[in-house]
Image (tube, rainbow, N blue to C red):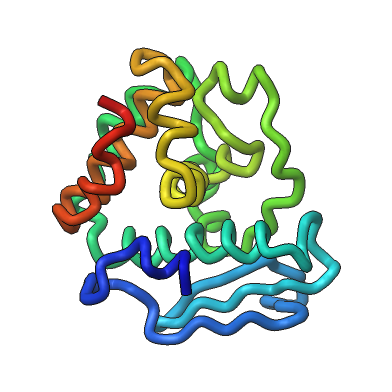
Length: 185
């Protein structure tokens, strides 16, 4: 409930139901979390690295809510500005193969590296699609805005992408500005 309190109570696009269970599969594959039809499902079973922890559940919660909000308020996400920050010549997996965007995606390894951060990606699976990249930023920003907005230089790729995501949240509801007030000037 503490994590849900970060979102304005009447925010359009928030899930109607959140279910946390042991495992979650989609078309026979284990997945850590999913959202659909106003519902969020989170697997807290042992098939995921880091599962069975509060941190995993919190991270998955913010990630899936970000997907839901992007579905409803996508017109407020400056995808052009976000894409301009991608490494030269980089193409998301889902842009190379549009069918991949429709398939269930299991993030797998979620450890950042200096090379990834230098390229503006927080985790390896953020390279799958712009939506996964956006949601990887959202899950950190909603938990600890200062990590991305203050820890990384404002002109770094991570700092600049974090500001695009922050601006999305403020655009969908000005009340988010108070969360980011002391961060990311």
